[in-house]
Image (tube, rainbow, N blue to C red; front, side, top):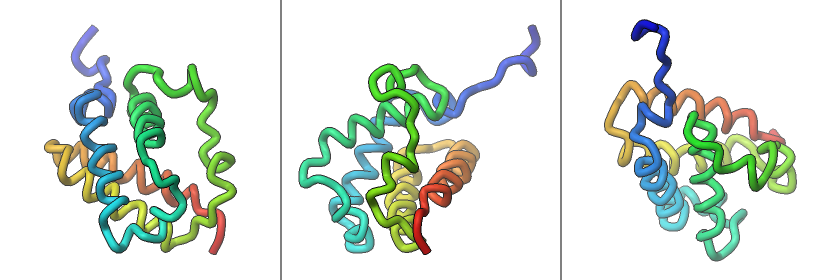
Length: 131
């Protein structure tokens, strides 16, 4: 096997579990404190502890790390799980503002950060369910 046969997962590129933990904590800290996040903060429970853990497990698996989400939750079915929330451009942009700030703060590899941003942006676009 040569080096070109080995693919490095996004999970490894960004720094693994420690970075995912910091990323999610930074994201929810922003969600809880930024005025521009008010629109999506209102969609969450008062206590963000449980959802922090769920997002950490989801992002770990989604980025190519250990399977921590599907054994407990099954297939993500993200749109189905979020259908009860009106998600349009404003909600997507608010969510992405928090995530981009968190990525900037926690992911030091700029190329990995840009690649992850592109992937997460596509996911956020796909989650919209209203105009």
